[in-house]
Amino acid sequence: MTVDGRVSEREQALDELRAAQRLVVVTHENPDGDAVGSLLGMQGILSALGKHCLTFIAQRDLPLPVEYRWFELPELITEPPADLAQRTIVFLDCGNVQRSPAEAFCRPGMPVLNIDHHHDNTRFGTVNLVCDEASCTAEIVWDLLGALELEPTLAVAEALYVGLITDTGRFMYENTGRRAHLMAADLIEAGVDVHDIYRRVYEDVPYGKLALLARGLSNVRRYDDGRLTMAALSAEDFAASDALESYSEGVIDHLRAVAGTELAALVRDRIGEPDARGRRKVSLRAGNDRIDVSAIARVQGGGGHRQAAGFTTGLTDGELVSFLRDQLARQT
Ligand SMILES: [Mn+2]
Image 1 (tube, rainbow, N blue to C red):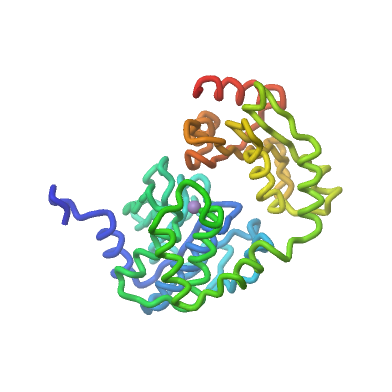
Image 2 (tube, protein in one colour):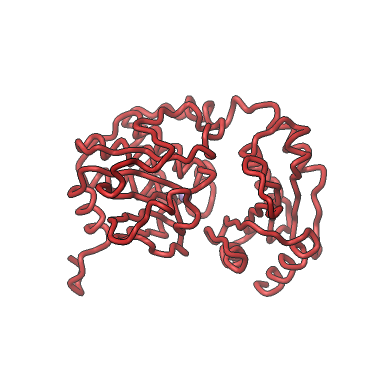
């Protein structure tokens, strides 16, 4: 209990996990390393507790991005389970429920546990464990693992480690603190082979990913003395590079890294799911800690972290550039 008598979020989440017998773990669309890692880590923990826990990933998000395709996906389902009404739904790494293909799972009266680290989380669960100081959702799952007095299996440790290294930019982003390194040490003790994971996640790059990066870097535009750096990837770029939608991951890091960049933006066509309204995905990164890109994304109905966020838009290229320049001017 906390001083004001309320059971803490963490205790509520632990009670929910201990009490539930049948669960389904879900995450956000276009799952990244932390989404997959926290999802599989939590599934492994719940299975170790003797629960029946399904892993839901929508068909359109499969196969996973090549970086994560080596993961085993235990108890995988791609459609809502027949006994959904008897299950507790555990959302991992979802700032808002609209970002998850499992949004339709949430019906009135159902227990929904929302475990996340986005500061703008909409607290859509019946129980919410939102820790914006955690480097990744996998770190929250790791904390729960300890509280449940479980030792991670190798599969759980590898999953959580992938969430940790991807969301911290291999321990280099601002969210990397002492706890991130303690977690790494703990997972290494549980058997994680750091270099082996590095090779699986960051090497074995398909040539199409390099080709797509080359096309993105060939059309970089800079505005306002280089404070806004942006690039675009069209459906044609993806086709010419023989690239999957997920191959665009990482392109934006090159834009952010350019000296003087305060706001980096990558705009790309949806190719996995051709969108009749021609809406495009925009990823944003902050070049310094004065910029809050999640606030910019929220104006367009998206969200994320201060340093990394995104939204989907029907704006034309000209409108998008004006919008981003205006938002940048407002924040500086
Ligand atoms: Mn995350």
